[in-house]
Amino acid sequence: MLLNDISYAYSVYQFDSSRYYAELAEAEGIVQKDTSVIARAYILQGSAASAQGNLAESIRKTEQALNLALAINDSTNLANAYNNLALVDMDAGDAQQALSRFHKSLDYTTNDTLGRVYTLNNIALLYYNSGDKAACEKYMAQAIAEAQVSDAP
Image 1 (cartoon, rainbow, N blue to C red):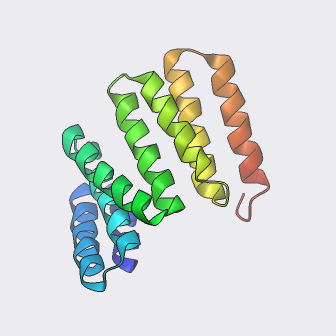
Image 2: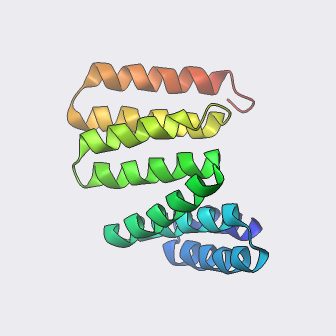
């Protein structure tokens, strides 16, 4: 889990480092037979691939994560996988598929305020990009409201 946390820390600005630590986490998850760790590692590898413009690899890795998370009903990894696939859909210009996947992500974030706020923010961004200011403001307001009542507003 620590290797995944390190990978996530690098995911914003050092994609090669993020991928490296996610690959280490994957290997350790395989040794430990921890499906949740492996799924998270695949999500992080997919995020790094997306950030580097390799959408096909991003989809492949994230779908691997999704399949593992579905097999063990891991709500956190399911939410993250659907959210990441929606971001790829959004980048590819498929707003309807992105919106569908963002809502699937929300279905798995009932006990994850940060994940929920992050996904609501992404939905707002989708509407902003499409020019629907009212829908954007609605989802952003919901994200802010949920964040304000969280443990870390």
